Length: 488
Image (cartoon, rainbow, N blue to C red; front, top):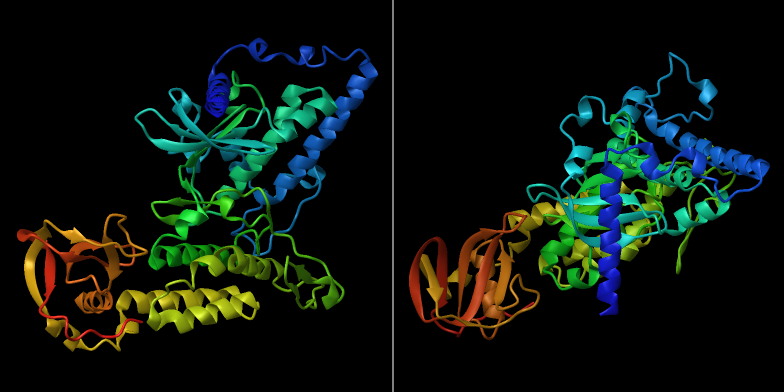
């Protein structure tokens, strides 16, 4: 009961925060600058605190400047950092149109995106997560469109510590909100099918007034948090998809517009799925910086149970350090748990190869992606099933345009259905092989439904009552139980 009340209170606070940030009211409603230091008695101390906070704000702005460099104008594909505002002039290459798009909502890129007006009738559903800086809320917009909202966590550690240090709630909100603004810029620069989609935002300076400076709400497509325990119980095909999506993402990050990007906080909680597709949702802890070195000893990747030493290049940076860190983290957090278990017999040697090369960092991301795409090709085409003889179907009678009713189901694992045995197959031949390997199976149906790979879903059962017309399916019934190929 107590937990429910706390959750309800937190959710109510989130809704209130979003609505307050959208109300077009006078500046006094939010508190004017003259009252920020009402508790400060020493004007010199107040001024010193303000200078210290301004310094922090300038540092945050400097972190954002490199993200404004247009990535399509650099011949070498390498972004050069700008360290001081004095370096900026009329001929600067900084893409301030992108900054305006993110902070003001201007520009062609955001014309079709959501702004503050989209949040006027927002309905919060649940709090998805809260951290030091941000609060993530699952919400429905007007018309029921599902989104995820990211906003400053007013009760978070970053905000609380800042207010304690600088005694300036509005200035601290502006400071903390820079992480959200930086994340919006990263989402603009790192657009990819496996990165969460930025749908819009509501900023404190959008529209020119009314919404308090520093209040930022980021609007993202809504995903389902990745739950490894549940994922472990899904069919191999779905687990392979998660790993394939991850490798495609890491391949993109290795040669992104920002350079080679490393995920510093590489955990399953940083990912969600949207319609079955894996997407990176938290870009807080990423780095495109090269690690400087003098010798190979300066290029050591340290993990809990393994260390790797990479070469120090002639440029004085560790060679492919971000890429290799990403690969090994993918191996230890994803591949180890999701890839080997119940892999199709015809693909196990290829899966083992991936496990060996990524676990020992013997392959780069290009080679790893090539290995995954090769497995996908074989799996979709059924080429890994060449050892199944066509005669395997001779023991079955087929009834086309039919389905069954009055079924006596049995369960298999892992299955797409918890109530029976529903598996992915390339063809009736593979389905017959599976049925022969299940002692309870006497018939199966190709349903006509397909998985993300284009393979058919087949339901297996012990018996059924009678046949019913169904133009989208075929029923295969065993003629005898005499000939059964050995199970793998």
